[in-house]
Length: 375
Image (cartoon, rainbow, N blue to C red):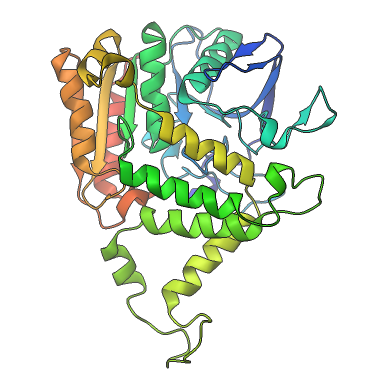
């Protein structure tokens, strides 16, 4: 059985919420929908649920394949499945497309019941606080009092941390991978440049490109190209592409000459055809806004003082977007509060994308931690 078939065919589901949701921004959604997938079985005690929080461009399709698209394996298919690090024979694993997303959950492409048209730019900004609230409501509907674990990489790691802060009693273990307690000024700058590429695209139309029957593909393409550069390490780009010329010689023009240019343009085009620009804007803002220590005068230890979960924090040696020292600051804040925390810095040449890669040491560590969680 191939890796992409280890779980087999999966089917996304939707959960409707009719209770108004007050957002951090002050806006209120009268109702909303979350698209999700589950893998494995919820046990009788409902104590084996593991929530997977996705990163910026991720979604609910964490593992398995779709019947009509068997090549479309879940984005963490190498991590989640029978006998894998997050074992679906032990755990009931949940993947949710975050509120504001573009893969079925209520977001900018959804119809605004007040206008009968897509929300577009009128969809309110959302934060990790808002997502944590939706995770709690989701768990309540399934009768899950506590997640055995909440797991996430990058923005997903921030979401996992947020849930331990907002609802300490609802999380037993938190696995925070390739994340940080807040973005650096440099990271915020990268996000703003990406947003400006979208906002200044002539086809953006103030976010109402749906009614204009256009898509700001050029801006979204540039945003993804910029982002993708930051997800890779210099070493990984050098080893994969180097200065290899696409056609073997210089052509002395502004078209594609180097293989790395071809790769980035391919990634940008592919992304622009499957992701919504307004959602990209929302997700980068959620990254910018995450800063749990802000309400404690920058004291991260105080911010974590109410947490009750046990933590596994993982960083990667070549991740310059969220370098290991940012993870170590999270570990210190937890240790200051005498929390049970394990930390690992994984040697890797893949940069920030390391958390998505098949790496024996990384996966063995994850498996060991997850296997020790009692359900």
